[in-house]
Length: 416
Image (cartoon, rainbow, N blue to C red; front, top):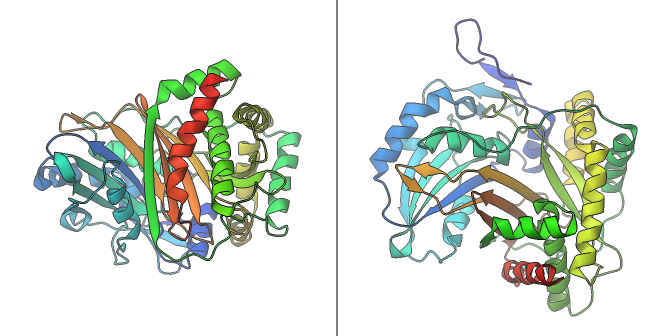
């Protein structure tokens, strides 16, 4: 669905919620689920009034910032007046760690407003040592990660150009249809044994990050015929394997580990439109594979089949053809802690965000936990830096070791 102004140039008073939007609303029982982008800067922070001035200048022109979720949970309702002071705030976190994880945890744990205003905020977070973080967050029911990336670019960048590549739709294939239906069927199967993940949640959320040069992932991919995303997932698979052994004292259960892979279907012209333009595929991470190189080969083969069969476009077509209530319930099954270990996202933000002349040295996308999910991972690329972010329930007490284990897997792939 593209967003067209009505006859007088204004935005429509209401927009129907799509199936993914309804799925998030259903999974969270109507409570906001934060999705945010964090940009880490060295050096002095801009004044809060300067940030507010830019937001006041641009926010009314960005459609995703003009809507909220209606109380009936069926439509997005336009809001005509934006009180910038309510949306743009600052906070000091002198205890924030060197990786900026304190800012991420704040964005995921601080309650989001359910008032009669659009559910988005910009935070200026002052950290230790003079650094600062610019944060944008919204409700996942209203916007996905790629949409948030386009929105924050349009809202805050000195020269708002670039961003994640749009999706150009292709004709679905019969093989893609079979694979998509197989994913749906698997989500309604019995729960998958995931001993390191299947712990009662404590409700407290932790965040950790690690950075690595983007050229490093590209080099490994070129050497072994894979993409940056393939390298990310293969290294993650080996990190999960090692962590599982340390966390449970036993090797990973026989067979691979199912994860949910969100894929954007946001088309040209929909960059800042409200709603989730995404589908979810089920991917089996080869955590039963002791060799990172063999894990990469298996991941690359699987993702290649997904691309060739155009499974993304098949899933998009199925969503459009399925009644929203039915599709939403299927969606909550496909991304559920009983059947997948984690969502594993990947977003290429493009050129570094520049705000008031300062260049962000790292971008990180993160999302809150819901529907029994105890862990989620994201690889966010910005300019020449890739950032792995792990969000996990603190019940997974040793999950903060995963970033270092992921780097170790990358080193093994470089030596292979």
